[in-house]
Amino acid sequence: MTGSDAAAGLSIGDVSEQTGLSEGTLRIWESRHGFPEPQRLPSGHRRYSARDVERVRQVLEERDRGLSLKAAIERALQTPSEPERSLFAGLRRRRSDLFPHVLPKRALIALSHAIEDELCARAERGVLIGSFQRARFYRAAEERWREIARTADIAAALADFDEPRRVPGAPVELPLERNDALLREWAVVCSTPTYSVLLAGIERPGQGRRPDRERDFETVWTVDPVLVEDAARVCCDLIARASPTIASEIQSHLDAMPTSGEDRFDVAAAVTSRMVAYLGRDRRDDERRAD
Image 1: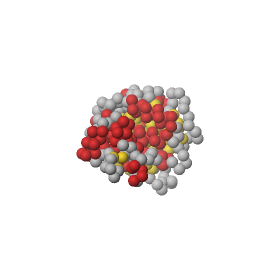
Image 2: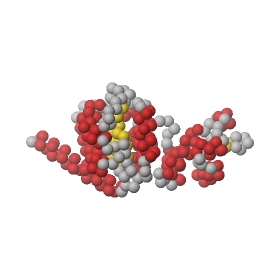
Image 3: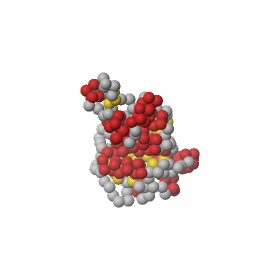
Image 4: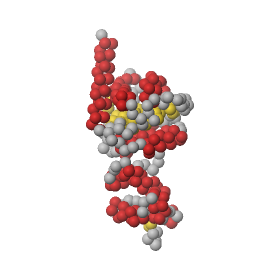
């Protein structure tokens, strides 16, 4: 904020009115945590930007979801001011401790199916989002996703579709642009009150001659409900380019979702067990084909 911008900025009273946080609390946060950090006029009066207001609101939302004030402030400061263009990159920016593992596409398919099967078994309502890269990959999984969409509050699929499509009882189909970063990404984001799982991968370059199922992806997956919700909200930014209405609808479901009461160990164990079963079946199929 330049000097002229600061003079025209928001006063502490304006920020208090727009966020519902008292002026005294704003001063305490600034004194103890250096947040929010206003510009100062020559008179000493504080001036804030619209971005400061957004960050204060985000801190309040993170606090409502159970984060400590310190952790909520750190997350707000790490959140980019511009909409994300990539789910994988957005997650890495938010959580630098996320360490990706290289997995072949066959392993991603097994893990995706495990996540989807466990969701169906639990009959959970919530938000389900998938990034499939190509429309033909989604068509191969469409029957499964139509079944999953019957219980979800909202399900969405992103790929290089020709146009947006919404059919009752099926996931919303949202097209990606030709130069979209998501065309190289694979994702399953499942956020419900008691079952939160995220799988995100980005295809390594230079694999044009490799068999499709052997293409490598840098991959992260987690059952951390806070990180899963972060991923869902990043997806809202990405989806808004194709359909602001659908993005707003997903955002509303996330905002209304009760605080998670899930057992992370139970979720991780269930998904892992199903994934191992799929990988074992895949290996037996390979051995039969070799015979």
